[in-house]
Length: 250
Image (cartoon, rainbow, N blue to C red; front, side):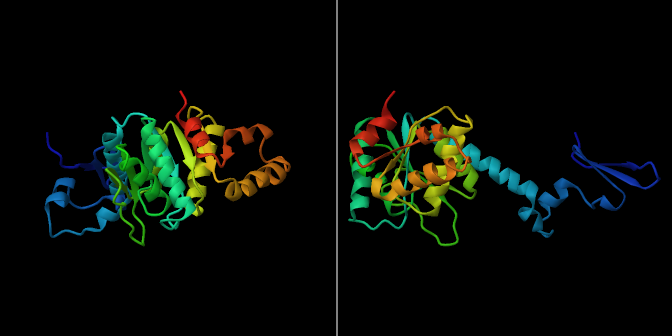
């Protein structure tokens, strides 16, 4: 079967071009065929930056992510700041949490970067656990930390977020910045709107997170922008063992 476009006279006597499911008429008719543009290396390359090509890239990222993680088994996503310095109390808490999750038989999934993410990956990897890093393309290149033993890099944040949610039984959130807040509220929104089956979201570090919890209660909920029951969507604790127990319980 030919892959060439079918051309025929349009209603007004001008050309009509059929390119698969797409119909082009009048001034929208394009020269050449898809095969010609694919095989002609001397042709323009602007098409690789067009939306149809981006759709294929997005599709390929989903396929690669699903393929890499489909057999992961039970897992917990751990979020936290890339700026957490090694050796700090927050970093060491991340290591202990990664270790505890691995000992409980859970894979640890992080953004694959430095700081708190590296800490959780380190704790898991050094204690025989599966340590997953889901990286993201950024203007400032970070790369996956050395403790990741399954890594996937993404171009698109929304594809990466899907992987965090799809393969996690719970979310465990260490102190973090804008990216951590984005991931946290994405998870809270999905649970609140019942777009995903409810699962535990635990914020570790009461000194860091309690101000946010208080603002939600005294400003957002008091102002009628959310319900009192929405405070039950997450749990704040300083107890690392409690945090691990909450996200790993059946």
